[in-house]
Length: 249
Ligand SMILES: C[S@@+](CC[C@H](N)C(=O)[O-])C[C@H]1O[C@@H](n2cnc3c(N)ncnc32)[C@H](O)[C@@H]1O
Image (cartoon, rainbow, N blue to C red; front, side, top):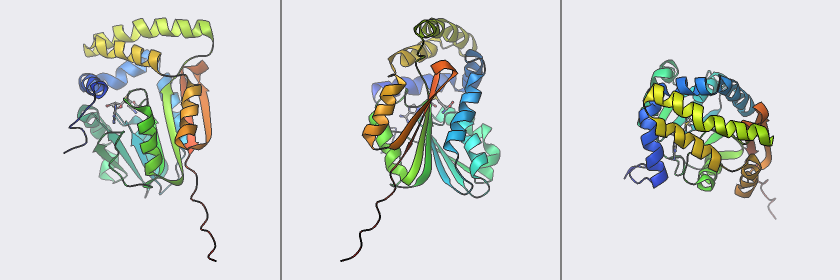
């Protein structure tokens, strides 16, 4: 039985949304974020900062834009695996990353973030961009990211967040409720997908709670950077290094 044979109702919703918007996903995002998402992505990849030769997993890789920037860091002999639930998003990623796939720097895998198809301790670094808001169980997803990291490895999450200034936060939600659904419906024909985006941002916890969740899962040195007055946040955490072997008696 494959990993995506059983999907929860949220996964089914997310699955059907990304199926229809995949071809125009990057264009719509660039327009509705006024290009900010590109600088947020660069910031995230700088925080991840994998070294040449390392193995990196990019969970919820979508069309592969973060995957591509990570590959530039681990080349010439490292590897980035991009994993996503949606075959349609992966098909776009395959086109975007064709050269890197050919050079064996990138591999794309269809799978579920909540049941990663990798053994414990497989990666030096794991990233997840705009993924924690879309999975049906954030705790389970973070446990999986923790599990597949090597001791001492780093997790980095980029997500939309909650601006701290109350008036700015109100204006932002008004904006999210109107502009993305309008542009999204014009460019993809799927207004509901962008209404879902607004709902998912509204119901996603404050970045402080995500920091708390990282600690609960067992990450240490957890750090949260707010970007663009809190429109986005990057969380970084480390999996504790293996304890030193106890001396033999
Ligand atoms: C908002 S997109 C982000 C894509 C990409 N990381 C980016 O920065 O543009 C969220 C992605 O998460 C994927 N996704 C949602 N739930 C998932 C799950 N349970 N397992 C794997 N991927 C999932 C969706 O298919 C979608 O491609």
